[in-house]
Amino acid sequence: MTAEIQRKRKILDSKQLSRVIRRMAVELLEKESEAKDLMLVGIRTRGVPLAEALAAEILRMEEVEVPVGVLDITLYRDDLSTIAPQPVVKETHFPTTLSDRALVLCDDVLYTGRTIRAAMDALIDFGRPRAIRLAVLVDRGHRELPIHADVVGRTIETRENEVIDVHFAETDGENEVLLLEKLGE
Amino acid sequence: MNATSWVRRDLLGIADLSAAEIELILDTAESFREVSERPIKKVPTLRGRTVLNLFFEASTRTRSSFEIAEKRLSADSVNFSASTSGLKKGESLIDTALNLQAMSPDLIVIRHAHPGVPHMLAERVEAGVINAGDGAHEHPTQALLDAFTIRQHKGGFEGLKVSIIGDIEHSRVVRSNILLLTKMGAEVTVAGPRTMMPVDVESLGVRAVYSLEEALRGTDVVMMLRVQLERQAKMNFPSVREYFELFGLTRARLKAAKRDVILMHPGPMNRGVEIASDVAEGKYSVILEQVANGVAVRMAVLYLLSGVHQEVG
Image (cartoon, rainbow over all chains, first blue to last red; front, side, top):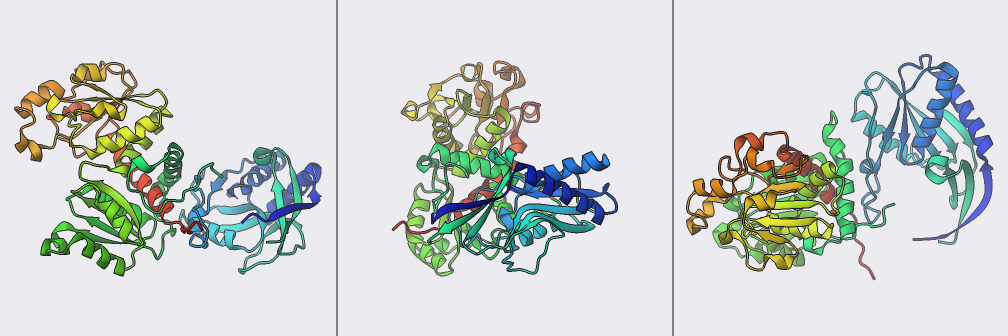
């Protein structure tokens, strides 16, 4: 299971990362006319600090406090019957109801699109949002489903054996984005 | 990732579990509680899995709780009960097991009057087996939901004083609870009439007392057990009135416990026998929370056991 992983390069350092997030927040506001009915939904684990950082930027620019929800998609995964043992289920919670809100799903890396598929299924079970958008810090390609992001921090060409590793101060002690490579299998 | 990951195929008793595994079940249940509060109380996790609920002994609460947990996880559940099963027609238990296996269920939830039946079944079928009560032996999901409720209110178990009162001898709930609570570091006291106290109970690492007052003094958690009136033919006590007089929990008696005591009962309760009505509904009572938590805990167990099991080779 454990392939050896080698660090290739740093894609974003802390400063660059905050600049990218700031731009993402601007783009998000541009696309949504009303910041008031927005809700950011962070997908566990690293979508949550991204959602919080975006909310902080929006608060700074527009003085609107956008609620941030937390979504754990484990129960909606399509690969539960192939991975062993069962992944740990964490809590999901939303500060308000989802109905009639424009939701922005936030995740660190967009890859196959399967996580986003699961997240959308989960959101629909909680209510009927006005719209669901997608904001990702890194789009690394290799989609397996017809899913695309509305707001993208960085698009990075990757090979299948490469890994994008996003670190946030809240979860990993540091803000940075790294490109890693899996050696052998 | 948690320190422990779940590798078991069956949940047969608390005796088999480590403290870390118990924590993992409780943590997982914590996440599942929220599912029952959603507008759509269902997740697709066990879609396409079949769960057989095999109840050879009457049960409403436990069976419904399992059934609701299964349905909230989108599993297909099929119920067998004693009155309709082949056992009534003379089929042996092993034949029943083989027949069930032929229908290739993913999980079997079983309650049986004889201890060890779930274990026997687990050896013979490929499906995961969950013990929903085997005689006076174990009832692991009840102990887990009790622990979950305690942890919610008290934060943890270390040094916690838990008093279990009533028919200690015939209760599988007690046995599983003692095993679990002592594993987690709680101090357990059991109390009841001498006729309902197993002789070697202290070998389980608990303190045994024969007076309600003594059991209640300074305790954090009171767990009242159901007096099994249907077993009363065995005459373990002279009369219901006398039992209530000596071991019935009243508001006045509960004052001996800590001020933030919680009161539990695995149900179904006999008001006026082991517990006074006003206490059962009073502010210390968490009895209905136990029932709600039962669904979350059973969802957690079903989820964990339905993982893919790779043979360690």
